[in-house]
Length: 304
Length: 256
Image (tube, rainbow over all chains, first blue to last red):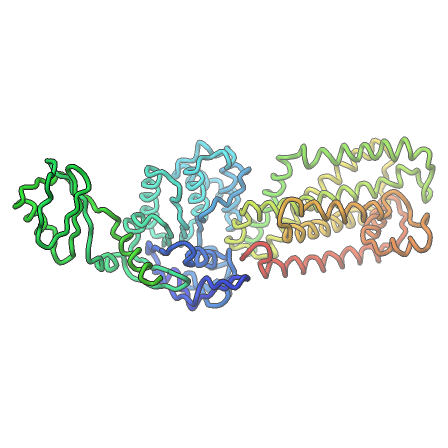
């Protein structure tokens, strides 16, 4: 079953800018889906139309089989949105923000209070429940928006750059929380600039650029297309003179570290054999660049 | 679905009431103080020199207009500030993404305006009872005009909130339109004191009909006919209500 089915969606803003040029997109129920693209590509416009915050110019959107135009209430009740910018009343107490949001979805106040307590505890905000939203830190505000989006138990959670400006520790804890709710059955659509985030969380991916979907596939098949990867290797001893290894391109980047570009067909076994022969002992190794990031730059770069 | 709508409406009303109650020093106290000053200065000090108007002590004559003036300004102020702030701060999104139809969003904000208008109206009526011989000629007319006027100006405030682009825009209409219309709407005088020309001009002021209909409810006297007054109020409510809904349907001020 489709969680989201977008057909021929277009958006032309009043000033004439064509943000979406007839996109088609489907997201399966239960998926963890990444919608990526450079700034101004049309990601936020797509999310905005999907969450009824932006008027479309033409096209149709179905959410779990409900047409967003013909059955707006049914379609909207399936969606929870975590927007890019903070959009809660900064002067309202934290618990009231959640209780009110539940109320807007028709959840009676007594039940809304229980749900608010559950999600505030889950997202470590319970101690701050009576604080005004403006008193929270940036990371807490992000978590508050996630709690608010989940308070009516949506089948589809849309996250528009949810970890922007969040420190690595909170980001990792948010990732594990999102994985958990996805495993529990919630479909998730994620837009992010942290491609490492998309790579580690998402099963399927679409790339949008200049209002057009230029790629829509699974994360695995996407990463398989990577023909070349650059690794950084740290060695046990300082390297005075880098050896020449046939089939590999080496560049020294430090006293005891160098970069090596490995083509897909060469394989890492061959690299390590060659390094052994050259009497170089490797202590550690890492990707120079996130793999998805490398592909993303290649794809978007080619189109522009 | 009706239960869902009712819960959503109730939530919005509670949210609005809590909003203006939390800042009662800014919302509920000032009208009480201002009106007490009106009663002391215009009612007692100057009013004693004026004598009777339309057969009533001057202070008794101005009480209906002053109560309604508070209802008008507070109903308007509540919706314009609340709706504009929700746009400016973007928390209007909380309602737009939820399964809440436009008419319910409008009803919620108008309900909040009415709640504040009625609250202030009651406070001012209590203050008035200390200075005047408050009597009610017709409870039905008094309450009907009281609530309908509050609905009307809550709708007007909502429309102002849709078009406002900054905080200055939410005070322009109250200052330059609402206040003059209210002061010239027969709050402090009977239009029978005016020349024929100015009486005719005054008839174009919709606030005149509301003040007089309300005065009829309290005192039993009016410069205009009651059915005409009520028809004008209801006509404006329908016109502004449909206009507000059409603005929301097109997403004016709230969607790009």
